[in-house]
Length: 167
Image 1: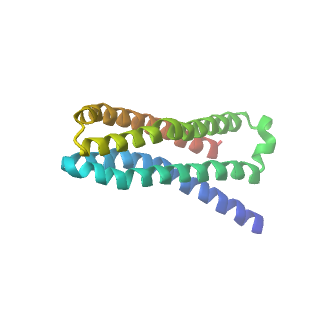
Image 2: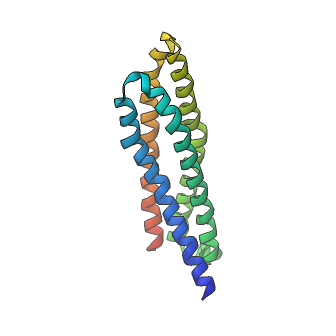
Image 3: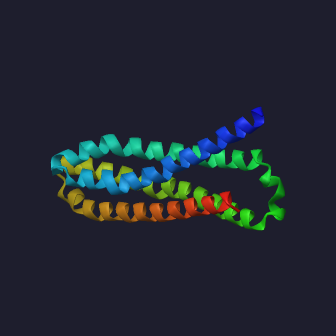
């Protein structure tokens, strides 16, 4: 019985952190970004400087917890040891894992650097650099496109995990 409780706790943490990760991406793109853009221009930089780094840290940490508990969950359920006996589950979990790790790498290598580039340009814009201000709309558009990519990949991962759960 204690092992079952451990397995249930790990599975709950995996699902919960996954919802926080993918939901956090939705929230960032659909609520926070429009709110920052709707703020008066002089306050956008300070707001983004406060919210942006916290949000990216949050997304990265819940992504790490999701991936780690997903691996642990596959081990604890015993299904990892029987990959060849459950071909649909194997393909679904394998693809979901690859997409989750890929999305994590995408956050680290594309989204995070872009956010910090936007923060640097925001500071330069506040200092009166008109060239920096001219670059900002293109960066915001790129950030939005990266966000939509994250949402699309995240939705696919959720679909795969639901498929795995019922296979």
